[in-house]
Length: 292
Length: 334
Image 1 (tube, each protein chain N blue to C red):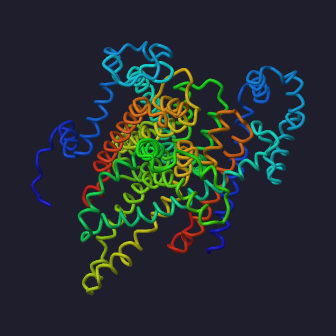
Image 2: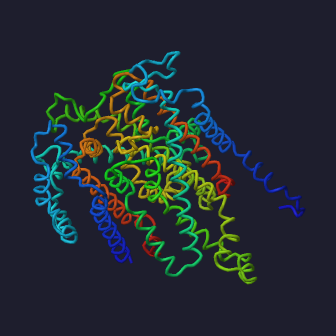
């Protein structure tokens, strides 16, 4: 420890330089950005109409006309992929946002107010955590008549808020005792203001890391439900592409161009999310940085 | 101390199971529409409309399943039926009961899951510890990134790729099923070989997907154990590296691995369901898939219930084991 205090860099600069020092984070963010760009820009180049059933000749291998070939129902695989990727990302982002928001609010409330509020929220989270999420997901999904992308996100989110609640509660409990919170309290700040101004900002880096994990888990859960045939029937998602390929035994029939692109896209999304969350973890979790 | 802890954990398990049963009872009844009528309509549509008056049959079914009684009576009956293991009748394989259908698939799933979980736990824990150990081999350390990336992928994606490579292209492993068609199953060497041959690809998918998670968890734990004084002392005493690794390093880093086992149990089970679907492996997962395809309502419910109860039970069993490894847990209470 040196005694000389260096000039503090501006906050944005400091964040940027921390981010750039984590190669995993940079690689992960770059990969995710590339996927988002593809999802946003490719529809301009590929006719979305080709993703309709019967739009082209079925079972065509990749060619100049159909870069990734066509499936047994006459959909162009590239057009399907372009239509499906944003839907899958949308489910993941929506579920991540809903789950994390609900979880954070409950965790803040439990940690800050304590007492009965805390007990109720904590017991609810504990019980929900012990009940196998997959069973409830399956049960709801089999009973919903018309599944949609949005409903899927809500269902997945309703089973994922508990982790955030528990960790935010623990963090809030420790932050609540810090002296600067006491100072704010003595200067007359009320409960809600105290939580929002003094405690929440300190949780932000941690929440960013949780968000990436939440999105990743949500996509994993939806793709699983979709592969079982419980996904949205009227929207094309990556999981539904795999379901249909599986349903028509695309692998055994050698139609590799049908199932390989969605598998590769899903793999890229997961790798991107994993690298990002591992990188963020190293920033948030000081212990990881010093030891590993 | 231990008894009180066990009683508390046991109570928690009962609460969870009761809740799971209640959820299983309530959710289908909250949904709009009538599953029985829908099912019959579907049967009528696919069978050329030859099953007669749908309304009358639906009413008969409803009376048979007691769906015409008040909710509370239905709930009581539901519990009563569960205690006698009566899960209803399979709609798709009609005379067979749900319990029979599930029992037919259970040994396959338990065998596959039991084997793969043990292997990947052992392999991943060892690999992770080796990765963290300063004097471990370079090759093992280099495995870190690939293992991490593979573990990020859903199980069944790995299954799809393995299926394509080894069953479609190379044709060295069967593409599906649990045993050779022509084989009469029995306690023969031939049966064992046939079953193992068919289980190879599904098992490999699950193990590949799981090993990474164990390895990463263990690596983190061993890294933090390495800084402890007792490791330095063991080194100073001149103990052989192998002994330090096993008794001072691995043993003390193991406990969190069991915690992870409990927490990820649900993931492992749901992952294995999809692997069974990919390989048409005749376990619970494939049955669930088929039941969803044919809208075999009671089978779906039965399997979901089985999943809930078995996961709750497994978590309880793990809770029983913890204090034996780390006595602080029973004493501290949670």
